[in-house]
Length: 349
Image (cartoon, rainbow, N blue to C red; front, side):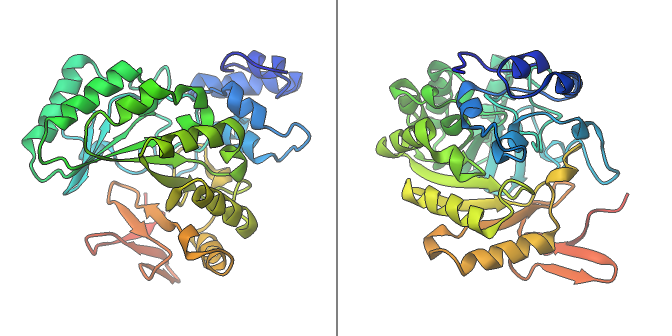
């Protein structure tokens, strides 16, 4: 079945043949709590004969999402604790997140910002709020890099994205712009000449981090979109999340990282899954993740090695947990952040 629109309800998913009649009510119950969107491109990647298909696990709602464990948090990486003005997260000294939009083309079932994104989320910054966010960046000369995230910044029209990039061009101390996006794999037709021109409109050194978690996402139209970005002279990075049932086998991780490199994408971050509400089924232990990353190094080229990181709950930043920053003891796991402080994981209380 060829689809021509994004699927957002249980009835939509049933009509597309992606769930049965008995799953409609559960899908709708989840959709009332967390945003659901499956684009035609993503639906076309699904293996309908595989009940454990890794694309299904990433994108289709399950009733287990409505179960929240005590250690899970609405804001698991502490964005709000480091947000001096709306739309800005200033956690590290030399870079900020600029979250101009909280809408995505698809909604990952493991999303760490699932309480903020979607039609009922924080929405798109007003013109006035965007002005304040850009003024903040202009007023802090220690900001060297601006990271456009959200939401997905590439859901903005080329006109709006280009205008924002041109505003960043006027801030001399900002030297690098990085964009984090799912659009190339989820809605690849958006990656056209106008969008590529908008991405480059700042004149700054620009990086684009493509989020994909399974090699099948980097095929067909998704592959073509990534190649168009690279051909436009935009430096490509990867970001992936280590997910139980999706990429928690060394063979799958190796194929994913090789696929990135084949497309000219530099493997960057492999994220340990965050403590977002309703996402327990995706989480491995840190020890399991370390074993996978260690095994990965024995299987693939050094070009294919991402940095395995944990966002320490509470807003304390990323820690590269494949290295000696994690200590396991009788009292649990302790993680050292980038400032040398130690934190229990999961945190108490």
